[in-house]
Image (cartoon, rainbow, N blue to C red; front, side, top):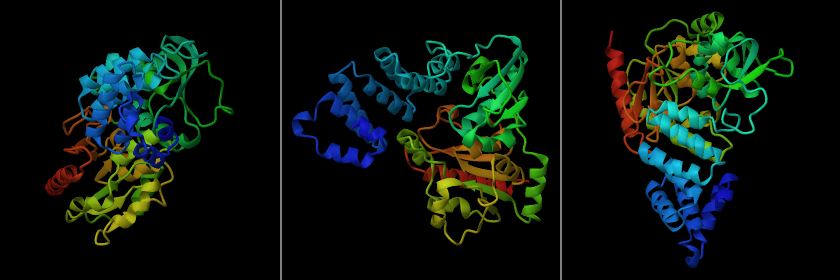
Length: 411
């Protein structure tokens, strides 16, 4: 079952589940597999029941404890999540994905010091043994050139590049490496304080003395909601700002940007998260019905395919053909009055440049946003509108629409 899921064959996994012989139905590995499948199908009750049966029958089954921890995280039961994931790590110390999941649960619970230590057990982290050659340990090396390596998604890079400034005085120079698809971040992140050079091709880049993953930079800087750093910390290039200002023309009504979907990944777990954070555009009618608003779509990627789900009565200007990179996204946002987006990189861009942003957030919230509240220390200009129940967008959209009405009427 797990192999089928990892290969992306979700349909095959369903077929296998339906064909399990009755005598095998209570086997702990079968229960664990059915529990994981139920998680992919967003059937949390079935997932919890199957996974609990698995660990009761086989208490040493680390994968089932891992999934129970993930399930508890989705349900915002952070202490239960931490307990389950600690058990998973105890049973399988080399399962780095469990250490990373434990770190995320600790972050969500506000226990950042513990979380950073567990995150260092990921591949390439400080706790990896044998220690990777050239990995910087955070000490002062006055004559060294340090390469900072990005990790995770675009949003993570945008959020945590702010901490490069805080370790800048420990080395002579800092390069930020943005290769392949991350090159689209380069024109915007060139404004990040503490970065001496953006490198988009390591083979042709200048020599370095050491390297460090970006999340470890955040660890060294003691990143947390209590120490979020100053905002704004990024700015779009002046010429891009002027270009978009000319292109938008004269303004007659408040301009609001819109993003309804993230980007699916080849990894099935990441794609499942993307499906939960994205919204069917047809559900956005309460927002789009707010009068006297000029709507602008910043949506890129596969999510554009759902444009036909937007009613023709809503006039939305599509800028997908003109947005070349994140500097264009930032410059367009800076020329809007407000951006409304799901939890994707656009939310981070708006927050990083200090622009007003409403974020529509799924119930199984990413660890960085916590379980409740409209505000986040990471981005003071952001307001968060949350699902009231797992998978149900109606309440979050209604709340955002009401807030948009109030915002529209404010001076």
